[in-house]
Image 1: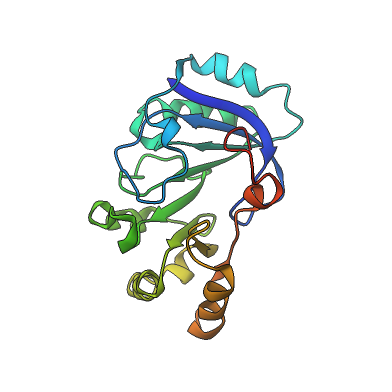
Image 2: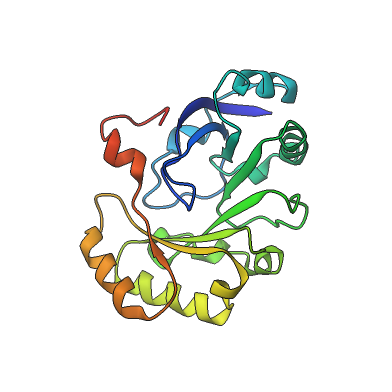
Length: 212
């Protein structure tokens, strides 16, 4: 597999925010979101075997691991990685843009699906059939730039009954693009059982771009 970086930090997003995690960031992404903050993962990376990856995270004092990117689902061997990590007793999360089928993902893996709002410029790539593969252990995330994004996301949530399919529906403001207070106000008034989230790692380490 081509791996961009492996590190130990606090999980900054999702319902697992604040927990110590091992992070495995895979190289490659077929999308180019307008607000992307991990463009360095598009091409940079080192080829590693799955046993090497597992050995690398072994010393980290946690049994939680997030496989992310880029877009981790682009590498077919990610499924073997999931199986190896699950077999070692890890709680495994995968963060995906949702544009690639999740049909083969082991149901024990916690999927965090980031459906793309209009301002991302990548909304045409949303693969809505993935809704059929979501379970009560999974989460859906919407990154919001403006009110148009928010209203679009609320429509998708209701159209696909997302709050009854997954454990958590998350709204995040684009970092330095939308005041969190504005998004908080919209969440308070929308009447949907959703959760506002801020990127914890960017609050704690605002000057660090990698390894957090």
